[in-house]
Length: 351
Ligand SMILES: *[C@@H]1O[C@H](CO)[C@@H](O)[C@H](O)[C@H]1NC(C)=O
Image (cartoon, rainbow, N blue to C red; front, top):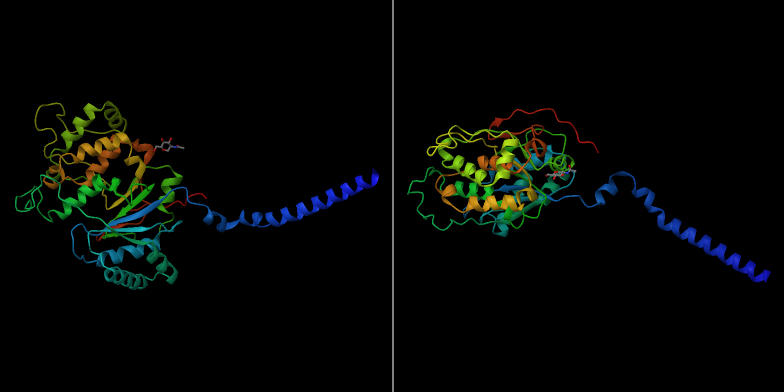
């Protein structure tokens, strides 16, 4: 019947118009959101990250003056794409509410002295997380080790806790182990001038696993036994031996002689007061097996004072492809204590 056909056609046209109008309505925000920072900022970042400071390892308060200098520079001089948390790992210094409030008040004052904008100051304050982290003497290490004359008895055992923590424990820390990246700085680290990229973005965009700022050897008397330890491990793990060779690793002389291999020889080290790490690369089964073996004899840290600086370099050369995965981040203007390190031109990351 013509009439009802026309009726159907009108209804169909009306439905179509209604549909178009509604879909126009729904779609109107979409073209806008394809432009500009807003859309980028609302997408979840493709990784997670944190800045890490180990601010105390023994119970009790700790003078924060240096830390209060270091933190505002990190906020001011690095163009952060995302405001990742700043983790202050402490062994009791910030257990009380008053101590935390007092610290944040002083941080605001320090940020103002360093001429951060009010906005940058508030961003920094919001990033701070106080993370209680305790450090125990391992079984077999006597409480009076300090009087028992370990190789290095200065700052015993605080410094030794720091070395053990950064050498292997950090990769199992509950607040850190699930991150993609962490960036360790020390309270005497200073990003003294502006740099042109966010270091985590650099790692992500360039698919890097480790970035250091400078290499400097650790002396033979604080690396007693480290050369034979690494050598024996490589002999028992041919894939490690192969990677060391691929990375151009050099041994001191006499590797296969029965005695004295590596005695008093310095050990190459990354200066780990700047330590930028892709965490999953330090949690692979083969790295974990190595870290477990490293931890199996606590005298290495608590007696011979092995440091995380040479061990980090050994880990990287044993398990990574150095040329592909490691970056010397000279683009970041940096001073440690009072010494300003050489830097290089910073090339902004492509968007
Ligand atoms: C990124 O690096 C890892 C090693 O860390 C490698 O296995 C992977 O293939 C690389 N990805 C790309 C896209 O190059």
